[in-house]
Amino acid sequence: MVAAMFGFGYALVPLYDVFCEVTGLGGRTGVVQADTLPATIDESRLVTVSFDATVNSALPWELEPSQPEMRVHPGRLYETHYVARSLSGRPTTGRAVPSVAPAVASKYLNKTQCFCFTSQHLEPGEERRMPVHFVVSGQLPERVEALTLSYIFFDAEADT
Image (tube, rainbow, N blue to C red):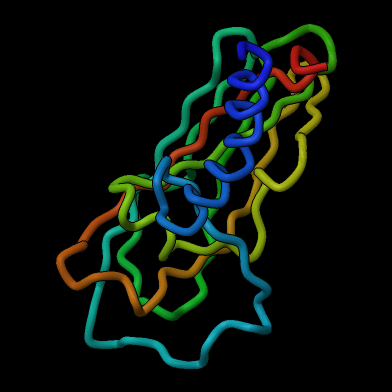
């Protein structure tokens, strides 16, 4: 009985990931190819996108967005940057995990390019500008006028 319950719980993990992706639960963002973006841009609407950054205490880095917020037209592709600085005396590797708030907006913010797609390696004292290309879908509910794109960096070497 215990083994069956463990197996059932283990099988639910992939289903939960699919559920989060479809519903936007957990603040996960989507990924799209730039050439598949619709050509429709809603010039009549502006949405405020705020940017936030956090670094887990196990990773000796500083991370900050290059700008605190942008006003964007849904459907248009935008670019911003985050700046990472290594405070370590040795090479370090970090991995970013994105999230969007409010959660309902997460399935309407899609990235075509992001430093979060791969681990980032910094040499001692290195500073790097890391780009994020994103689009807010024109399907974003009208009641959502602002959203926040957050990243938290973790020590990727601690994962292994």
